[in-house]
Amino acid sequence: MQQALSGMNSRLSSIGGSVVGAGDARTRAQLDRSITRPRVGEVSLSAFAFLFSELVQYSQKHVKGIQDLEKRLNLVGYRVGQRLLELLVFRDRGSKRDVKLLNALLFINTNVWKALFGKPADSLEKSSEHDDEYMISDNDLVVNRYISIPKEMAQLNTGAFVAGIVEAMLDGSGFPARVTAHTVPVAGFPFRTTILIKFDAKVMEREKRLADK
Amino acid sequence: MAKTLKTLGEDVWRTKVEKVNGELFALTYGSIVTQLCRDFNNNYAKVNAQLDKMGYNMGMRLIEEFLARSQLGRCRDFRDTAETVAKVAFKMFLNISPAVTNVAPDAKAFSLVFDENPLAEFVELPEAARRRAVGSAAGPVENGDAMASAPAPLWFSNVLCGVVRGALEMVQLQVDARWVSDVLLGDECSEMRVTLIKVLEDEVPAGED
Image 1 (cartoon, rainbow over the protein chains, first blue to last red):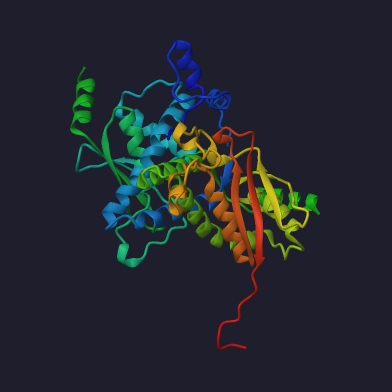
Image 2 (cartoon, rainbow over the protein chains, first blue to last red):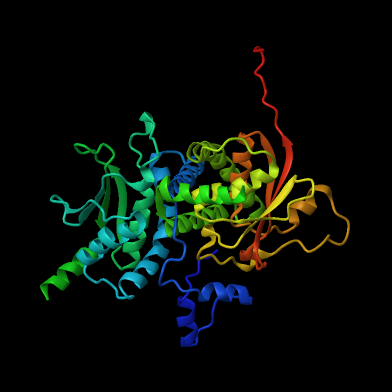
């Protein structure tokens, strides 16, 4: 199953490529719809929260532990991120790629968070111990707001879903990384979620090469 | 009466509901459906059933929030229920207002026609998911076999049927909700048929009088 992005199709067909799957006039119409401005508007947070909790509950049946559950949530988020990358880069960046690491991170920190959650992330930090680690933090992650974690699963952070989104966006931009979500309570914000991004060695080498030029 | 419900729905949406990006919602749902298709090996009948089950669980909890925010009392009849579901409930959660049509003469069934579906944004179904059983199969049919081999289309927004079923069951109405047509399958419109099976009596737990 594909979630086709409309607008892309009209550009593709003008290059002369053939379009996959558009059998009848109705599906062709779906692919031609504009994506420049979001058409869906908003839905209630509760609708999303209920859906997300069902996702977590469903995933729990197929896994054997916290790591597995986070991996599954990451995978579901990954698919969202792949499509979100195309959508947001098309809208906010005019389809221009970010080639510098910091710009890509800033894009996620500001644009992506703003598009998804209505406000930029609370902080973007570079790890002082590891050169290839960065952290994006959110004091009150929307997806976690109505999730309560039982004591025996205290290690779990369902923000793994958002980590998946971030991972897909970085992978798709050419900055492969491993992204995970952790709960890092801070004074005043007991449920602060930190998205930890660990870039591949190749990415750091390339950054160094570009910086040295 | 319908007008007041409409205004109520809009008011609740505007003032009492915290909102989130609809595209995130659509993409998340799509990712969930994809995951289910993968888990069930593209057996769309099972995916439909699972979506309905998830919706049922959601509906059972959603009804409380609905009642709390809308502050509505009992509906006078099933037709009233239909209007409430369409104008207030769907508005409050998804910001859409499906139309109530095809009310059965004995008012025991109605259809909701959706002209916009936030779940189906960006979605295109593959050919295999759109295939439906063509009439009755020729030749002898074994009891279990016909159902197993008849291709079921993927009712993408089946979760909504479950939500309606679960929510109404919590207010003592046992209904059957199913899609009869879906834009994603190439139909003209997306229509959900809701049929009242029976009104559940409040059961007194054994031992109490």
